[in-house]
Image 1 (cartoon, one colour):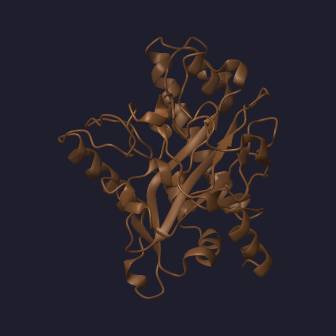
Image 2 (image 1 turned 90 degrees about the vertical axis):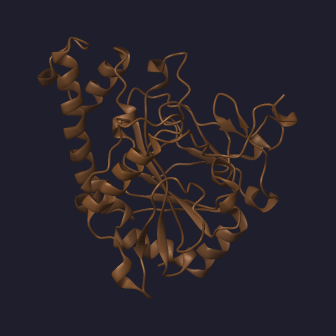
Amino acid sequence: MLTSDQMRFFEEFGYLVVEDVLDETAIIQPIRAEYSLLMDRLYQTWFEQGRVSTPPDALDFESKLLNAYQAGCDWFPPMDISLPGDRIKADSPMHFGPAVFDLLTDSRLLDLVQCFLGSEITSTPIQHVRIKLPATDVRQDEIRPHITTTDWHQDRGVALAEADHTNMVTVWCAISDATVENGCLQVIPGGHLQGMKPHCPKIQTAIPDGLIDEAAAIPLPVKSGGVIVFHPLVPHASLANTTSSFRWSFDIRYNKTGEPTGRPQFPEFVARSQQAPETELTDWRIWQSLWENARAQLAQQAHQNIHRWASDAPYCA
């Protein structure tokens, strides 16, 4: 699927933009429909509770997102494809639907991932939806990187040390066009060759100031249906969304089957296997139940950290 020149580019710079990976009809439209229905249900509940005042019939998807956010109704947790990084409760909201599962198991996407990992591919449970508001509408106290700008970090830095030698790639999937204006990703080309940087769990889990050359960063615009594959050590962040519309993406990760995921308390699954095809997960309902079972178990346990960094480390001062 990829040329030798593309593979050499990835090895040298730590990322690769690949357009036209996700089919509009088979993947993108069902995701939009699934999330629109989810938002319809959330907004209807909040309207009936009197928490939002504008009738739902008068609003489209983005208008419901914005109205709810401005009213203090939090739609991110019930839309995210993960459990929270802090204390997990028996009713912690999350979303694991068929359209998202079809994204994670899309054959064309897995063909791409196979170029980097080989044929034994596990879907890593470090994954999120990101629906970025226009910067002018973001509250001053909003710190979540899934809604506002994302600080500089390495994906290996937001996992546990068990995965420091895992063969893994991140695939950043554009559901809407990602542009410089609406807050696309930016990366430090070649930064993966400099190894792991310390991170600080401050506003976000991020690389401390002065440890990377931010002046070397380049933006990576990509159209809807395109993806960015990047090495788990390449430093990256996002720009601010300076438009009046939302910017929508998923970041998902895959690792070579049998190697640690870096988040062992969350469920992984085999997305592709040529050696043992019977181990592949093909039913989204089983995927959903894996997360429901994990939530039930984790709600009864002490909180488990999702990274290894301490806020009182010297580099965090």
